[in-house]
Length: 547
Image (cartoon, rainbow, N blue to C red; front, side):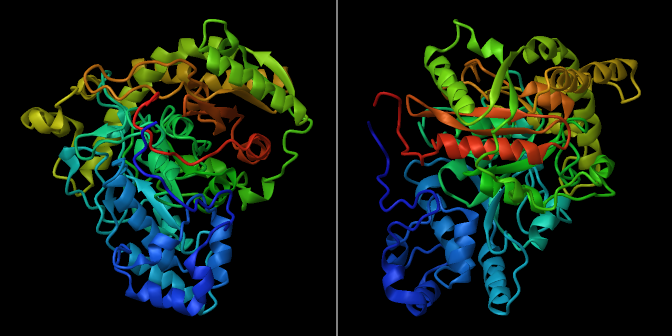
């Protein structure tokens, strides 16, 4: 098999099996090496002797506490990895913009640490952010669209403010499917007119899925400690599954959406994307909170857990009743996926769970047309509101469409903008058509709750998504089966995906979904599954399957 790079001294499962030179030199020389390295770590061989790949947040914190690492050094290491893997070598193209203030933030966090101030478990931890989330700094917020280039937000999105308060280092922004994959029915996931095409790090000619393609690819390839994605219908969990990482789509309202370029006020949410359930739970904890600019967050009052990492227990599957989506067990499915599914069901049972077949998709799939109608109405309404107060040169959806038409060669070289056009033709949110559609699509809440109650279930489970399709800019994405994102998306309910295994070097994830604000319960089960299966492995950047 052809591989672009052969990485050495991997640090797996958060252990320092081969730390190299710094352990020998000691803290004094480490600091000296840090001072003499350039902002991206290019000028010093020191970076060739350490590898922070797969290192978890708790381990990074322990090393910074003990003086083995600093936030500046960790940030420099990730910046160097972005240069080595994202901008050259495999050229994943997952990072659309680097934060020029990243090193300065890291230095400030190091100074606070030296003075005895630790803000949170995220103190000094580098985070990548999807490029549809406002950051009130030198980075742009464009949703990958050339029409929005130059949009520097006046202030942070609510969750970015929380991220800064927690002491995280804003490393940069990630590429995405343009307008969060709501531009064309013939689109290619992971492509944007501003950022180009992002690749799956496991097999480079495969699609990293969307719309949080850059966040998924970057986390998998160890270009950051953790990342933030956003989801309307599968855009956190699908790229997490395809890129072999953990993704949490929270209950709509657990995290604020103010300052995020919207699609749907009913279904939108940002969420953590990480290599472990532990890291995802840590990030989830620190970005919750009620926001007067997003009234849906008021529903979370009294339902937020202060620290979701307290629910990380290895016996989290014991005594649980899990509904398993039985349509995924059909004989006409991918035989390799089916074999892995049966193995997974056996593993759940071995770890104390009772597994009951259910047919959730049969009840929720008929709601799909209504859901799509809701998204079009709310996209027009939400985007017009966002653009009207933004610093973008276009101030409405209509102007975005006009910009794309006037710059079609660069803005629309592969697929058009029929979703934008159709959405712009919709009426306002008082339309009877909209009210009928939203009543139907949100009936998914009653369907899920009814199934959980009727069968006395703790969660409903299934395959998160099919295996990664090939990147096809001519025909666009194609279906590979096994999609489980819509029920929780329409309901606005939590959904967690965890790596389940590999088929032909391609990752595939396993999903846990539950009722509103049941993240803490799902995290228990997801963590127990992760610890029992232990299948996560770093990518090797293979060019093609079979080569």
